[in-house]
Image (cartoon, rainbow, N blue to C red):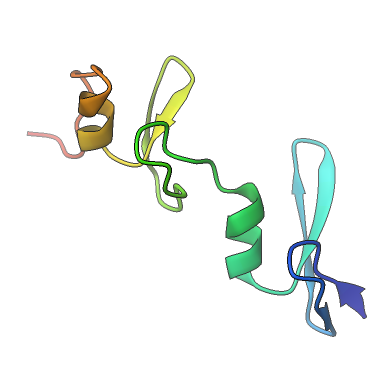
Length: 78
């Protein structure tokens, strides 16, 4: 059995995620998100969906980007 690197749980259904040349082991998607999902640069929430990005800075949505002065990003096309 493998041990989750976030919570330490030993689980027979644990899985591996390879990211940026490193291998991680988790027992749930929740732990994988906690460890690997980027943080919104404005509100700090985990960006689980598509998010938006400008100049290497990641935001969870266009509203948060606008709060940081990035006006050209949109959540949806008009």
